[in-house]
Image: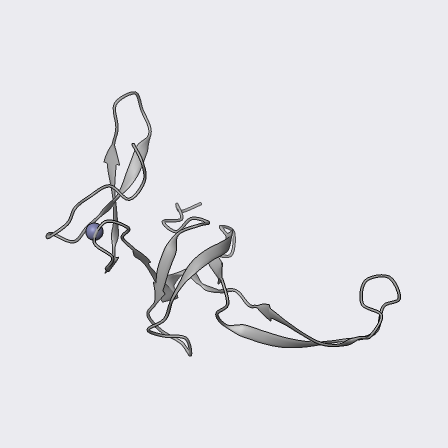
Length: 111
Ligand SMILES: [Zn+2]
């Protein structure tokens, strides 16, 4: 399975679709389907039937719907710009994500 460059807790910029241009925090990642759920974006209304235990009234609930991970770009915490993601190997094994903007190039993850 291909590696996901976006992780839970990342700040991302939406680059296409109805929420294009907005930034949000990633609250869930589905690596299998390569989709991400963004805080307070792409809200879908869902009609529910009353359920005596969890939802006695029934009605409409709003929740964030997943969007394709290819529709978002990671926002670099160092320069604050959306960027493609690179990788850098670190001492002792493992790797960290890096900002691929030539004016920045900083690590995105803590080494
Ligand atoms: Zn950067």
